[in-house]
Image (cartoon, rainbow, N blue to C red; front, side, top):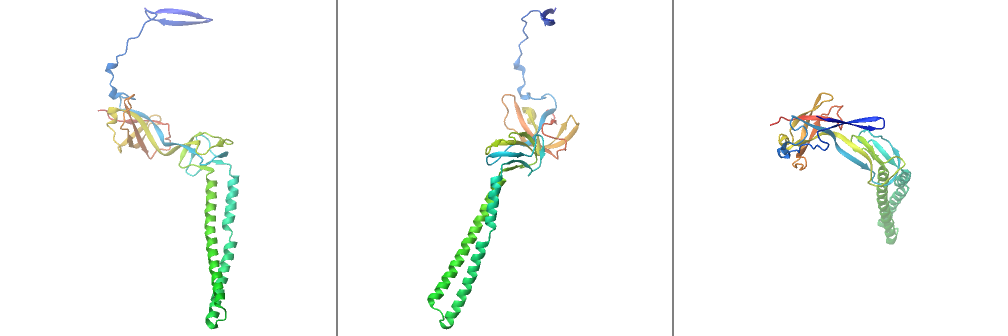
Length: 291
């Protein structure tokens, strides 16, 4: 018979149920009968339960340092590739872009050098005709005209090269400005905002976490014997109990490594034509016929 022991604690009375002895111990567990080949989730049934995950969990960062002046997203927001997520302070970079653009677009030097080449070419041609006709000018004068023309052509070429360098400088300034705006590299869900507006962001330090949902994967851990029934590239059907709905997938990965602690192998199934309601974190089940 079990004994009842009453313990008074203020106005509360606790009732403890005791066995035959106050120090009764449970029977030891016999581990010798454990079938480690079948250890795992729902190992005795046909359903392998797992979780739908995003393709990648990306930690986004700026390539340069600065103060965050704008956060354009919130946690849980769905974004498309190319959407603006954050901006750093950009005033100095914008001024530099304008300066480089004006410098590159300025054509006064090129126009003047082109005019000197045209005039030099005309003077050289006229001098050559006079010299050939009646030696109306000296050979030295003709040489001077040739030299002036050659120098004008060289100066024009130098200025044209300079314009190409100025264009590259302008593009570099644009790239520096672009790097101070963080955009989404793919469609995804903002899973965490790590740095906030007004905080300093260091180069290559994560400021946002983005769940890449361009593809979804069903991930589960299977007992060894059950994993042997699944091959990479195999088409399977997955089921969501909450919605009582099926969706298709293709096995993209079967781990060749068995976890020594649990005796399980990890598999990934790429979801094909994912329904709109399916999102990362959704539970699902994969049915595998036992052998």
